[in-house]
Image (cartoon, rainbow, N blue to C red; front, side):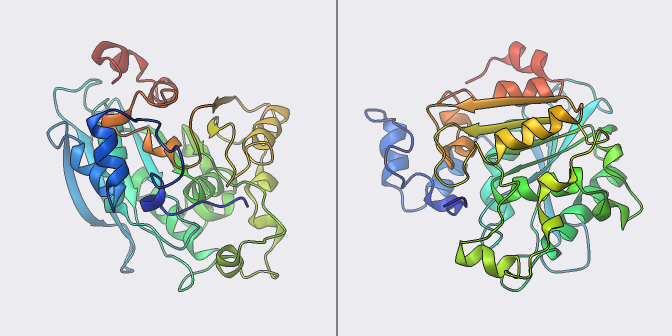
Length: 310
């Protein structure tokens, strides 16, 4: 199996956080909705929030924006902007569930956008890729207004969201349709992404990609070129949902062969879902930690070092 569970299930997996004995662990592990618990424990005073911003005319073409406080370095206009795509097998997910990710990055100085996008079965490939590209085009056009540097726009995603990010960053068709280019991106970050998954076995993914009529060029690995943006690829070394050997490591090898700078981080003490959950402030120390390599990639390592990772 190479595809993810839904965000709400990530703490139900056996040994998910290995937090036995702590009060936070008891609350999280007994919760019926762990994502809601995580979001409830995340501060609300470390960023400025603007919700439900339309990036297109369709009902799901909305995003939430998380902006650093004015006192958070770097100064306005020099901040990176990150467009984060959530996972859920292209079938489930919503932007409100990822407040913990918006807070994690905005509190360290990045402007963060978390878009919704069309989900299967109502929308199938390439609709969700087109939505993702439209959200990134909106980010490029509005970066300066949001206080970010338009030259420092990144795409980032977890699981199927990492696929969306990879396709926007690597396959020039989608931004090209909108009069933009992956060359405008400063880089992309993939968390446990599926980058080469044909043939398709998962029933939900078959629907999302119209299997067996799925084109070969639907796979991110097919679009690596020397012009591809630099990348940070992160995964759990023992991920049994999106296998890192087939996906993360093969993508890294292809990027290196093309001469594209790429960093790889594998985590032995995380699984497919806790890889993204560990960005949440209450459990940020878990299994890595995962935040420092992202901050370093975004050029914000000095901010994180100054504040201290928790």
